Image 1 (cartoon, rainbow over the protein chains, first blue to last red):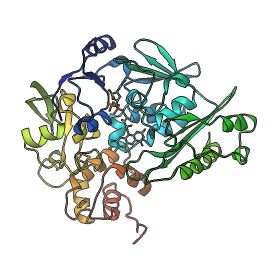
Image 2 (image 1 turned 180 degrees about the horizontal axis):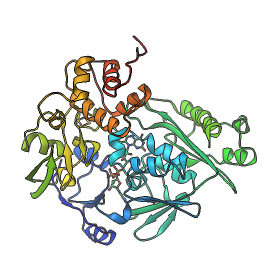
Image 3 (image 1 turned 180 degrees about the vertical axis):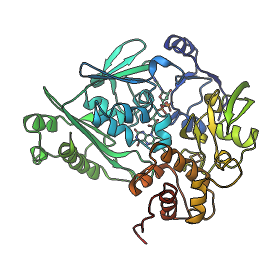
Image 4 (image 1 turned 90 degrees about the horizontal axis):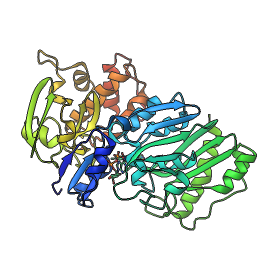
Length: 262
Length: 161
Ligand SMILES: Cc1cc2nc3c(=O)[nH]c(=O)nc-3n(C[C@H](O)[C@H](O)[C@H](O)COP(=O)(O)OP(=O)(O)OC[C@H]3O[C@@H](n4cnc5c(N)ncnc54)[C@H](O)[C@@H]3O)c2cc1C
Ligand code: FES
Ligand code: FES
């Protein structure tokens, strides 16, 4: 790994200032970035740790909205969101393994937007708002394809606001070696309709399955999507699963998520 | 280079590290605590598991500088004060929870983290908790039995035997 300067600011303002210099990069849990740096696929000259910023930590629920600080770990979300938003807490509780969950953060996951990551499906499936140091971005505008988001250079995800649904569930078909989602589906039922977001499947990254949303908004039961199918066009194909296999999984997992939603 | 200080197994330590120095490098190479193993160096195997502020982490996937000021516990801090094996370590020996022993420091640190939060885990909870700890020798059953025994529960006749 190339060497770098390590800085650990205690406020968002200091972090944003530290990120102004060329070749500076933020790091939260490092559970994605650190392995990437070992491979020299990333080589920042300055690494700005976001783990010392108190205002980016924690989970709170007020008026039907769950707010999570950008540097909150998966383990903390798994425990602290459980009473408010069990579908989201359940997702966080099954990311990677316990050690990954003790370091990895929601902000890091959403900034990275890995096509097989879990959190992007929850953010899109909840119609969440991504809060940065500069602005607020609706999830529908935030995810822009594999590893691509609306974030600008040096912009930090400081928090995420999730409208709390009436019922929700995440079904992850685990890729057994990486423990990421081979395909994952997040279903959330709100008073004004159902949202279905799919991760791990599309070459475009996380996406909404709008036909299923319409069918489930009319009738929230697994049978409601029986007649629908997902096209294999544009789905990921690799040694773990063909595009057709992933397309098939989307429907199976959506049904399971609806059946399990609580 | 910058100076860092932390508590490791109850003792205050400090050292000079580069930004890129991994916590596991600091533990093994600077502090000579070689009980923590590096199995993969790619965040997959859990052999390098230690506790930082009471939480298990992969020390190959954390910079030493991130642990500045923290309380770290490694396998060297696991035995009882009189040098005898801890309950978890003794159970690994009694139930043959190791063969080559390479994964064992990480397994023991993962197990103690689990029992700290959940003193009577089910067999399924133990298996789920060990998701990030890979063992090439034992086939896991005896590790699960050891953790059941260490938690004072009956040791099940596990599946696939
Ligand atoms: C063994 C293993 C298994 C895993 N399994 C899963 C899984 O099942 N599901 C899953 O979803 N993920 C999984 N992950 C990934 C894990 O969840 C990561 O923690 C997460 O994707 C990134 O979060 P982080 O805080 O570690 O980010 P980092 O690694 O610190 O950063 C990732 C990227 O985001 C940028 N960044 C970090 N924080 C911010 C911020 N607040 N604002 C803007 N940019 C930021 C960094 O510059 C970097 O480019 C796994 C990882 C490992 C090692
Ligand atoms: S050596 Fe750290 S996870 Fe394998
Ligand atoms: S005992 Fe050999 S790897 Fe686990």
